[in-house]
Length: 281
Length: 349
Image (cartoon, rainbow over all chains, first blue to last red; front, side, top):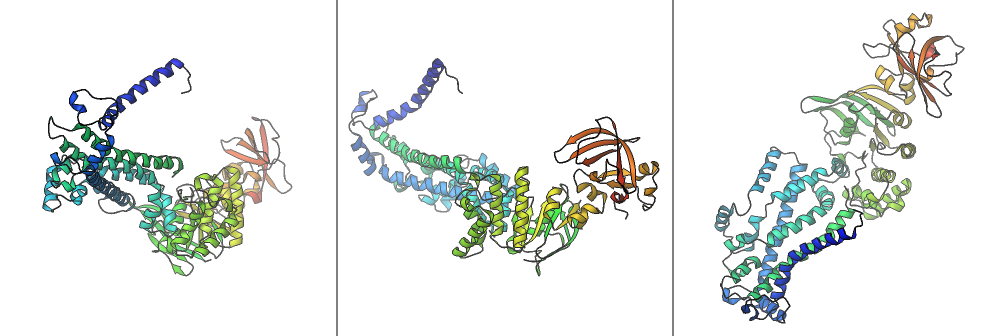
């Protein structure tokens, strides 16, 4: 749009600013709340200006956590979350890249059948299959372990489907040229397909990481040992003590929990832009 | 460098679709053979069978002394230039050229030497650090050629490598490919649907139609003595005129009496329809000029023969002697007639 209408411009900006404010205000409140002292929340009004206890609150949460509600230190829970989210993300990407590669480039019996089999699992999110999955994980003795936290969430129909669609747009000649150049299937996968998929991988990395990071129900079910608590479920347990919740400390944990996904997005965004401007099939 | 031998090659796809129906061809060491034909004639399939990208249903393929039917493309010692270049977009030109050598376990300095050598030959040295997307179509074409060149293979295979270039560049690259092949003396098989490209590039042409060979010969042999109506109309532009013998005989010309009895159609090249009467004995045919087309160095006169609906085209160097809609008389000498039988589609003499 190249129109220049001052009034229209002002109006659009106003609407956009209102929209941004609406989204950002709760985030701002959370940050401000995490800087208050213990007494502030008891007065019944929400303070809108930062208080002076930021360092104390964050240090307390990072190092010792809320022992009253049996929540371990936030540092440890963040670490647990990070391991779980990364395991899920990397596992999902590896498995879906390999299965998409198989489905697109290899001719084996019932190829389409297997593709559709993978595809219909899209209809079965964790919550639907949670009881049988729990049973399987429990029988395998994976309760209270990182394997139990991540492995059942690794299979991904979405990523497989997206990679399949992408692989199908890679010209057939690319494979043929690689064959003439003496590259076997895995060399082709490693040298040609992976570098070409890098933008897709980056995009899915972000989505999958946030998906893994935000898991709540699953860790809640299979961890009883505080050593394996993740931050998202840990925050919930901090508020269990109704009426007595130390909101300034909980908010500090919330802010810390929100940071890693933001960081992942910021890092991967650079890759997005690079990929969008440089990749060409 | 090697001899390439195709014996009874057949390709049948699922559902009993026959794409290639038995091809015998012997390409001598260092020879440049062009496979030419309309789309769907099986020429690309045949090339891909030689490359190893399509399996061979029946027959035997020999490169050098080896039977290669069941070998992977990489083991056949061939290099292929693809129609859309198929360069690896994420690699630099240097890496594109080096990739095949790396996979074959060449030493780093040997790779370097060969890539520099090929780049120098194709004048793409300055592009070596660039990515394919930073190159123009012609430059990409050179890189694709370079990728084949560095391998120093026994056989080069070209799959319509020039069809994505504009007309001017196509002519330029055509000349360069020819010169390069002359210099390297590598046995080459080249697929095209462009008859001009075929004529100018090949030591020998193989005209394919419907999965079969129609004719094999040097470009001039094929142009001067097409073995079938298909070849006659496919090679040469504008296409050869086909006129029923009965029509010409009606015009009372004893010149046609020595044609074999089964001849019912004669082909005449557009250049052999003369507006000036020649000294030798000739036919005279009247026609109406329908359209005059000036193409610079030559002109095309589209005519309709008098007393018939038969369209024909005359190629001449000069301007049209008559206006559109007027009567034009043209002359044909006996030697310019190509006798055919329309039922068998074959040449009769």
